[in-house]
Image (cartoon, rainbow, N blue to C red):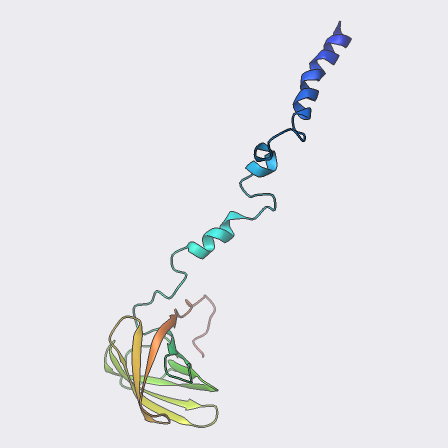
Length: 168
């Protein structure tokens, strides 16, 4: 009786496997109920786009700023540096048809600075940078450019990694 009884126990198994056929509802198939979908799209990629902090979050002058002036649209980079009347480390850079690097000297801590830069083409730029908080700052140019230029916060400055040097 073990032989025929064993054959009878296989019939329900065959019936179950036959139930996944053309007559079944496709929404109940195992591939439709998998959380990653049929192509295995990982969920972390979807959450990375909606994570907070994906845009600039800075509240100080440190960061990258994009000019709103036409036609330049240059990028101003401001690094962390001590507020000083006699700065010694490069803390200002401008990319706008070439690269300029320089210093900022404090006039009013956290608000107003004198900046001076020397560009690759030996051009000198001088001006007064005013930051009143928020996402904009202005530079009134004294030499090398004319007028007042407004910059909008574009990107946070990357955090310093262990082993990074202070050189720009």
